[in-house]
Amino acid sequence: MTSRYRPPNSFGRRRRRVWWWLALLLLILIGGAVLVNSRGVVVRQETAFFDTARIATQEVEQIAAGFRRLVSTELRTINRDDFDVLMDRLSAEMADQAEMFQSVEAPESAFAAREMLDLAFASWAAGLVDFRVAVTAVTDDPTGSVPVDQLGGAIARIRVGDLVYARFLARATGMLEELAIVNEIPAVSFIVDQRPLLNGERLARTIRSSTDMGVRRDVTILQVVFEPLPAGGLGEDGEILFPATERLQFSTVIGNRGNVDQKGLIVNASIRSEAGESLTTVDSHGLDLAPGEVGSVLFGTELVEPGAEYLLTFKLTVVEDDLNPEDNVWESLIRINPPG
Image 1 (spheres, rainbow, N blue to C red):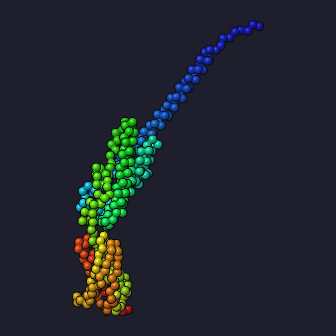
Image 2: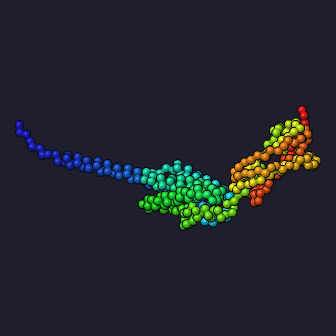
Image 3: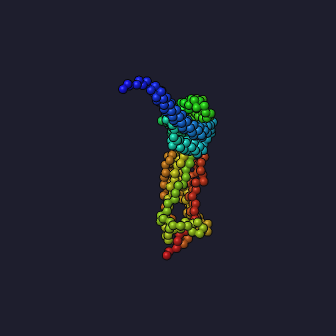
């Protein structure tokens, strides 16, 4: 039996090679599609992050503008209360922005930019708090060097925030250009071409030259204490009710809320009957109080009649330029309950 020669099946081999190349091409196309889709997700994440950053930094720029106005002009004329209110607001708004931005998510490609912005926000928030404390210390201790050093430190911390933010803005701008996205993230700086602000001593002189910031006088009657204690509640005319007694002793608690010593403070106490007759008028001894100090003035025991009503008035020495003279007077009707 004669065997037949069969040529190699070249057609089959060609067909297998075609399928192999088609499979390879399909894998390449699928891989490319996955990469394109993945990059699209990242682009959307980057866009969302920088949109959030733009909104946050626009708010911060308003805070920075308020701080720049304070330092350039308002600090020369502002009084202590207005300064405290303004710094409370600026510090609270900056702290809110810093806290809110901590919860913002960023893709890995924008993580470094997010870290910079976090650091800038934190530096500004801490610097504003330090600045308020330092300015207060400078005004309360006009000749001290420690407050000046504190002021220089606060300025440096705010400046760190400015410098870190400038790095963030450069990185963000470059990434947005690569994405071909228009996103007007603002330039933010708390300190702009203000040479006195770069030197704690020079700024301290500006603060100390402001009479409203440098001197604050405020004494007040904080509390009146009775023995025996009031019975509780008020009468029909708002009078303080006391248990039946024939003797009443009282004292006043005085506070110095200013930033200068107050010497020889006197409290005048008077008691008038229901008919308006003056029963007692007495001046306390002089009381010396340092800034922030509290003192007590004790008066003698007064004879009272159960069932009677009295007008009790305390008047504290009104010092020159007292910020709140209305709280130097305490006045109230009191009634002693009858026996039983």
